Length: 223
Image 1 (cartoon, rainbow, N blue to C red):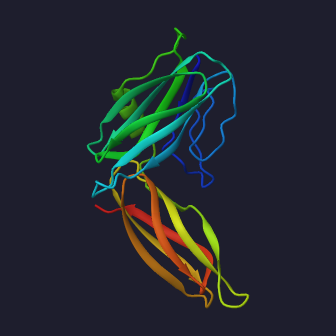
Image 2: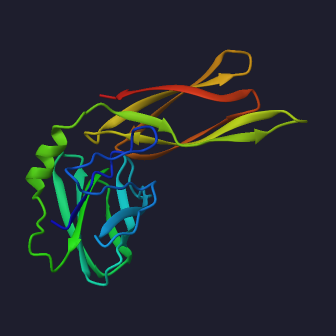
Image 3: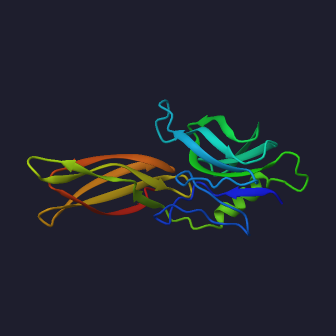
């Protein structure tokens, strides 16, 4: 079966991972695709709609990778805040970008994606009920990781730390509470708490010349 499966919303082995299914290749948003004959798909751009007050997600753009010039079908399943899943299919010939234009304030940011050749008669996609069942069987514990810690130039030769963004994974798509502790050079910790809806990048906006760059964090469902 020329079918590739991506649990792309699961980005957490702390180096970002996905769960493999049988012998099929997998990939993530943050990992380069190895170009093969089989079609592969990765989400390259997503954002939070400005009009949404409590979460929401826009799946903006993705990339199909394949050596073939055959037509490829990509099926994307997105989770809603109510817990059910919506499906949308896209086609393109050979490798290249796909403008997804898939946006809603009710999307949690969690999704699955499948890709196969259009002329592959053995290829079939699961329905939304199967996706929902499969997702519920996975670990429902929320996870959080600081995405990047930058060095912050300070007075003289001193160096502090700057944390811009983190990544939140909320399996059920609900609101989570993140408590971030940043280590200070005197051995104490600076504490900041965030609320976030669903899965995706979170703006942390914390910096200081008194910070070492080391951190620890807790995350839990807010309700």
